[in-house]
Amino acid sequence: MKAAPSALRRIVADNVRRLRRGLAMSQEELAAQAQLHRTYVGAIERAERNLSLDNIERLALALKVTPAALLTP
Image (tube, rainbow, N blue to C red; front, side):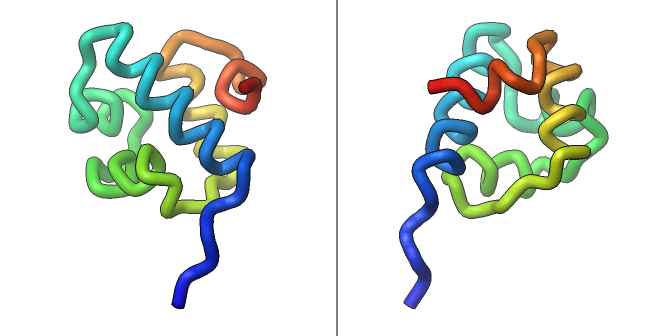
């Protein structure tokens, strides 16, 4: 049985989804801009993945925000 995602992982997931939708961007478009796989972006938004700092930075750049914006509730 999998453990529930941490509160911070859930915050990142919600922020990525909200910011992506705010830019009218698909998961596939975000993945391409962040140089990540599209299924990985979906897993991030479902709080299934534990992101590295490198991938937080990639997502932030693609979403045109600071990395801190992804970590802030």
